Length: 335
Image: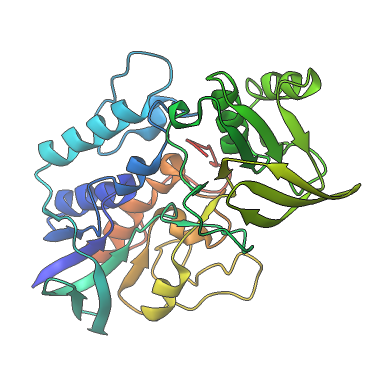
């Protein structure tokens, strides 16, 4: 029997595995995809908004070439940490359910079963995009995970959204020869856009290099066009590609299936003890971004990694760990 099974092998899952091992706990990580699976969906040349020291886990230094780490550097860093720590990880194995009770759980996957005393869910939020819920959204030209601008050279591209990921995708595509239209349901670009991105996107819109529609809803996505509702009425735009940069959400249905109670607040915040991160289901814990429910701007790598020692201290000793306050440490790595 394992002491703890950790569902998810992203940075927070790895941090939990390290903290478990350092407390003498026999831990297994199970990941439905690749190691650091969510990172594979990030833009190829993405640069994190954070600095490497705030992304370190297990006390391992994070060397980078520049001031901010790139996606490639982060993947390599966490891979090396997992290898150095000799974490036991099963990849490409989806967890289907968790049976049993505290001290005697059975984690059932599509490949086998694992008995464990405790379970930690560190599944992140990047796997499920927020859908537009309009006709045509399932057309192959609709992209929810922007990777790089090269497929869109010489194409008419609509970027949906008004935050950092939308602004960066619009600028990237524009600078690589796409005809870009930015569409946002809000009255203006989000005030959360980073200060070094905002002047660039605002100036490109102001000079007409990037066309922008605000207070605008997408009504329908068609094979060669896009129907939108603007403050001045309906408009059909010629269109080859739609980059839906509308954000992502955690798998709340999976949490409910595990027996985790969700709140009635707009974020549907999961029920857990803020000191130990144990949920309403005894012996089952949450770690990282998934703790925020639909409020995905609360927990990131930088503060989510601090969940790991608290959780593992509670599992190992039953005590609440002495740790830095988590509230207010809301840095953002990427969007």
